[in-house]
Image 1 (cartoon, rainbow, N blue to C red):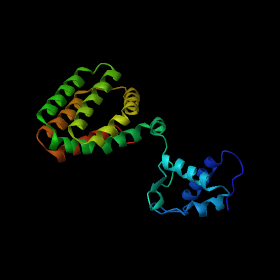
Image 2 (cartoon, rainbow, N blue to C red):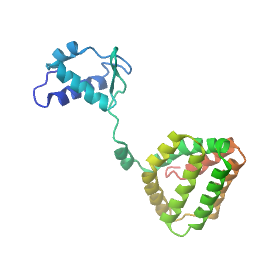
Image 3 (cartoon, rainbow, N blue to C red):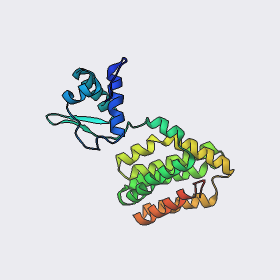
Image 4 (cartoon, rainbow, N blue to C red):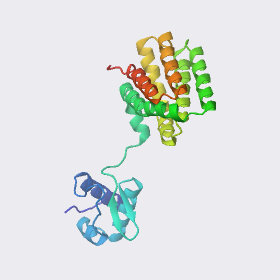
Length: 221
């Protein structure tokens, strides 16, 4: 039996409950014992257990369902997204881009409007005009891919793209500087072929071309 000895008790109780969840004592979706059971197990009052549950609910681990009880909704605390992105290496960023942009390209081929296609073409022209400096080229490239993702009409894909855009920008700059080359005619042609597939409503080709292109960016490829 775990007993808590130091202040603040609520934080300690939350840590103790989280440790038991991590150890597999309660499975995902399982209901926790009631306050009258947990409180004596931890040697604290029911109000402390309530506060500990509130803290873990705020961290996404537990959820209180009115009239039903407290349930496990995650097996660990989700790490801060910004910290995850800071540690992500180039290949991890590329793989995340593949996950988002391949599907977005396919959806854009099906859902894009004429106005969105014109925006994609404008972004491609701007990308072509920014071949001289790495940072300008990466910014123009991201603007093009952002236009494609927006044309997918999926707010979650757009949110994901925007969420790791700063880390993606940094990773692409690092990669292109490492390789010492960017903005080649072949690279521009690949992007034009993706756009052509989107314009032709060819979802399969748009996805395949996007995946093939992004895979070439992996440093381990």
